[in-house]
Amino acid sequence: MAYQILSELGFSHCAAMGAALLMLIENALITQSRLMLLESVLIFFNLLAVLSYLKFSNSQKQRPFSPSWWFWLTLTGVACSCAVGVKYVGVFTYLLVLAVAGVHAWHLIGDRSLSNVSVLCHLLARAAALLVVPAAMYLLFFYVHLSLVYRSGPHDQIMSSAFQASLEGGLARITQGQPLEVAYGSQVTLKNVFGKPVPCWLHSHQSTYPMIYENGRGSSHQQQVTCYPFKDVNNWWIVKDPGRHQLVVSNPPRPVRHGDVVQLVHGMTTRFLNTHDVAAPLNPHSQEVSCYVDYNISMPSQNLWRLDIVNRDSDAGVWKTILSEVRLVHVNTSAVLKLSGAHLPDWGFRQLEVVGEKLSRGYHESTVWNVEEHRYGKSQEQKEREVELHSPTQMDVHRNLSFLARFLELQWRMLTAKSDGSEHKYSSSPLDWVTLDTSIAYWLHPRTSAQIHLLGNVVIWASASLATVVYTLLFFWYLLRRRRKICDLPEDSWLRWVLAGALCAGGWAVNYVPFFLMEKTLFLYHYLPALTFQILLLPVVLQHISDHLCRTQLLRSLFSALLVAWYSCACHVFNTLRPLTYGDKSLSPSELKALRWKDSWDILIRKY
Image (tube, rainbow, N blue to C red; front, side, top):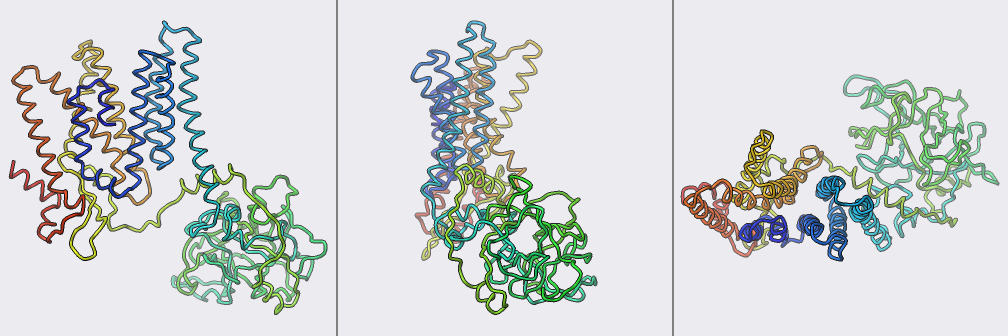
């Protein structure tokens, strides 16, 4: 495809062959491909999208609306959707292709030789192939995915309770048969919707907050309330009617609705959930949340919570298991029950802090909870109730999410998923990639010293970076001179130079610069899609220098000799790094040290 792209751009056979050769001897691309990692597939679809669009653009000049014209236009959209489907970063190449197509469409609109109907047909065809087809293909990928992968897996907890309950096994097995409507007397577990830093459930235990914290502040010394990232019997709470003493569901059940005032009783300790004007342990600007006073003791009501159903259909909406997302607002202080996300010290068993947050500070997912497990309480006596809390439910109520709801949630979770923030041994910054000041050890033979490292061909990387700089300088130099009505290049050469730069230099920029804005752990392989476009740009710049800057035959001959020497040097580096690319040779410590690229570069400088 590298060969074909340069051919379609109008460059010589030698330049196209040079691009193909550089792809073949780039050690990092070989390593990533041999280990079947995603970047190779992403690069394939990136290049296919660019190649298909170039073939379509060239067909446009000769036979618009022909079968080949439609084929290449449609394949462009399909390749773009596949690139995004492999990795979200594929969207950068998709946007690049859309930008180039948009510029071409703008010029098409200004073509007075085309009728209005013809222009409209051109625009509709491009919109269908480059917007509708990729969107439909992307939806189809996930429709097939969610249809085939319908069972529960080990990482379900990052998804919402409703998503998990739609999968076969796992949470669906636990929640199958749960009552749909939460009623007074219901026994529930409350999961935080935000799920950051880890999915967790509202939890309490008999341990109390320390009298004095390490910083000297005091606490209420009441029973701790936390968010616990594991299923536990201490996650169960009972929804109580403040006007009644009983903790069982009446017959018929009285459902809890939006705006109702409830009390939450901890199932195992029978203490009320409460928040008050005491600073939280780790967030002193928020209120402490605790459990206090057995529900059998009569005291003035300081533990009332108003139910706010965030995703309600109406103001009379019923609190529903799994489906309803609710906020619990403390009646006396107007504080909202919130997961702060901070880990408590050892006295809190490293569980997550729960606080009372004032409503005026705005809405956030960390203040939203949903009922995950639910049963109708039948036992008024504590001993019987503890046995009941350990037993599964029996009623059978089926619930499912639509494909669109699951699709949108999955996309959101993928977009917002973050690493734990810890440094990886082989992580690196985008600045390290350009200078090749990093590598990744992929594999080590268990008995010999044979190993595979992700190492780039330093000659190709350095030359590609230099070519990018040279192209940028030449482009702006020509642009300034054209502004002064001095045309150094014929019009067709100039247009070819601009298009090559837009696709190759632009492809490098859109696949590289966004990583400076990403808050995630980055590795050298993230640079490979950008590097591929730089490699395509390198022969473009070399041919341009040969054709337009070497004005005498002697200069062209000298430049050709330099090119041969340069390609030979690149091949030599490829062969030198071959043992670490293919992992087929045992290496001594001294041999391994000699293969570090900076040492190899010094050796090459001395040798050549």
